[in-house]
Image 1 (cartoon, helix red, strand yellow):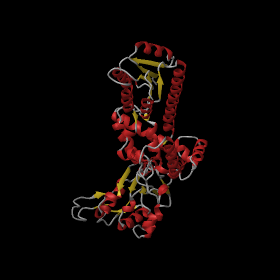
Image 2 (spheres, rainbow, N blue to C red):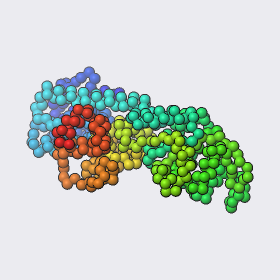
Image 3 (spheres, one colour):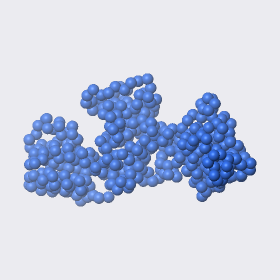
Image 4 (tube, rainbow, N blue to C red):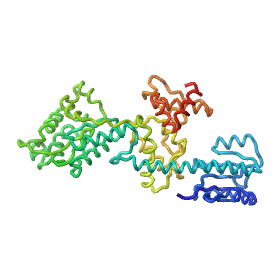
Length: 462
């Protein structure tokens, strides 16, 4: 990695020389600029971790410099210095994202201590990023990212089932990654080198279902001008993945059951059965038990498929995997868009952690893809996220009223700027709601220790 860097912007050359000598360290690059516009060019080209800037300069004030830096990279620590201290300007600077506001002449020992603390925090962030990258590499199973207990349980089931299954049912909400679990089953099965054939049952016209699955002979119906093999024959020696099987017509379900039992298919219009050797993976986001009770799904087919069942967990139930998934998608989209993107700002991380993710991993992928496309600097911030997440963050409404955590309540929009204490209380409340009251899980969501969480619960009388 490139060395850490500190940028000093001051139109007083004597002050520049004094500060650069005072802050010099072997592993830290000191950058200087006597003109604020040149300083901003250095911010764009070198991405310094810390910027010290004078408040009163010609052509551009330190507040203007702060605004530009916060737009480019909100993770940058900005310290303002001025000989014209005022409470109003100090409050404005802090509200706009400054780390500190120092009065000139600056105390060199105090400044060294402050810079040392910020550099130490930057080194920790770098180390944490390295560890996240290493963990992301080790937390991948057949293309599926996860390190939570729920995911390790699913990985274990896939390993045990793959060598032996003939038919298996994968359940889970839309966007959880049922297709990835199906691909993992196929690759780890004895027919992993065979064909992997996919049929989305919700996308097939009902009258063509049998022809798609089992094939047809010439003249069997209008438009059948030649013999055609169905997907079962095409998948011979491999795996057939039937996605959204809950949308399959009842008549086709009966014929599918016979194929699963006999491993034989009969083309539409043919009198001859053909032997096939196919493993079948079915997936659904519907409650098939309810569909059986409502006579929309055959009970015998359900029990044939659900003898072996794999459930893919919701993202809301494994939020500890969120940083790994975010890192994975940032790497993917940064390469796709040819951008250097290092991660998310702290406030963007909080916004993602507090969202309920009704669209699961697919929604997260879309959000990170949007952020990577919109970001100007190398760090995704709140403003780079989709509008609905920005609105949730602004309103303090991360968990929707329709979610289990807030059932029976109504979200009230914020009526003003909340104090730090109010925001902290809100974050802790949301984390506890999202974690279903589990303190360990809530602490992981907030990225703090469990003791720290207990202190905040007591502090806010929660």
